[in-house]
Length: 103
Image (tube, rainbow, N blue to C red; front, side, top):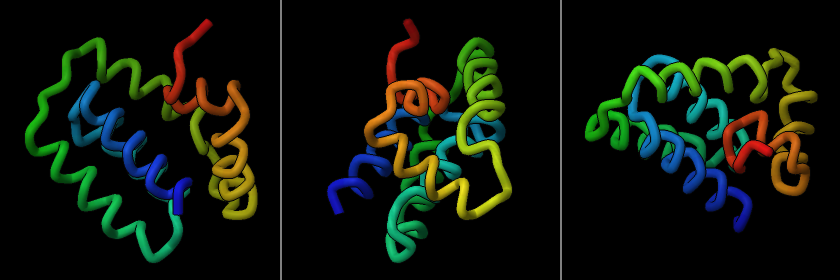
C-alpha cells in the first residue's frame, strides 16, 4: 500500500512539473502501472485531473520526452514489473523516471 501511495504521489508530482497530455501524461501513466492493479484507475484519474489544471513549459515537455526514453520503456510486462520494484530502491531507476535529482 505504501508503495502505491508513493507512486501515485510521484506521478502527480511529475504532472505538477509539466502538466501536459502528451509526454508528461504518458510518463505519469507509465508510473501508474507500478501501483497495485486495483488502484491503477484511481491513479490514472488523478493524473488526468492534474493535467487539466496545469500548463507545461517547452522545457518541461522536453524533460518528459527524455524520461519516456528511459523510464519503464519496455512492452515486456515481467520486465516492467521488475523495474517498478527497482524504482523503490534503485537511484538509477528513479533518475531514469525523473523521480530524483540528476547528479
